[in-house]
Length: 240
Length: 108
Image (tube, rainbow over all chains, first blue to last red; front, side, top):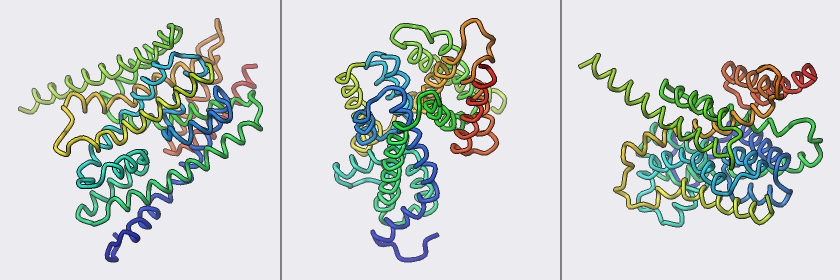
């Protein structure tokens, strides 16, 4: 892989090198998020604030239609939480590699670790579990991702103020979410859950307070878990 | 939404990013997730995203018109088909936006 003797600097640079190929997509995604935020719900300052602080593209894209529809804050925050729950799984996988690191560094590294950095970091620790300076490697991934994402969002926010609303560019955000969700529907249980979610979401589209979103996600998660249990029990019966 | 509510939402979402990404790292090091929770967590993001995407796509439906008389639905279908072929977010956005524009033009 990386033949030289690892130093903090070499690992930081290696992280940058490994994350670089994904940065066109990250920049474009940031741009789409910037456009979607400004086009449907937020003022310039609010969009800049959301980009700078929230730093979670899928959650940002997802709450935009909810803010535009004036959903209650708790519904918006609950939706953002459910979308971000995947990060809890990521953090559980990262935790063994950050034993003995200071609390402040854990907070910072965790906050900066989005989907792409996580995937690349896990590839490294699987390929070379004993290699030193894993945190520096992760910092290399996350610092570049952060920068490219922020720049992309900034470009999107500025562009959006120049583009007429009737172009329907906010829809690019929905398409980005679509590209994000398809690869995580990996098995039958996930597919069944998503199908139930879609049906409940259509039925509940006009429910007050946008509660249809919460109900649809809850019904889908329950369905996925039931199907998974069923598949596991069926498998046990066939192969004793 | 009022500006105050939007800023409260932004502050709340920032807290959610920190809690979901870093919260687990700050727990005692021997702690692990109960199996039922980690199972639910595995399926939650896909369901939540679909719960947001579907109403947004269906908002393009014109009342009384046919199911496919919906430019956003046609754009989303074209985008999904593109993603299955290319696995590229950029191509998905490009083809989806093109299909949306053409469908709007065709449907009037």
